[in-house]
Image: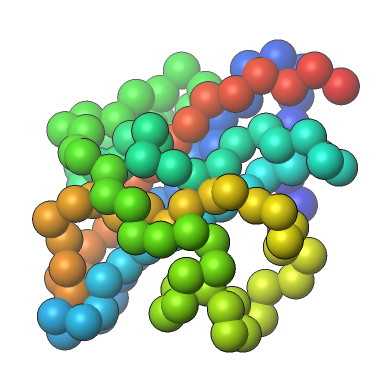
Length: 123
């Protein structure tokens, strides 16, 4: 995936949809954004998550509304989310400490989650 960064403030914004409805179909997402060995952003329970769409939420100056508690679902290699196969991911760093995360009380419900993290990039 290509990522366009600008010097200074950047935001990594993600909208994730879980379309499954069964009790054993929890959603989750995991991100490890790097340039070389420098980690710019990685998911953990400090990431805000929300079910509420707010216009401009993905802009550098954007915000999320009705932020919920973020739940740790597992380390990046936790099955069923990670290996074996890891959804055919390529170039995933084997030393990643990124975590699979999701709002704490959503299990097997169709929903879209919005999340964002700001970081600074200095080339």
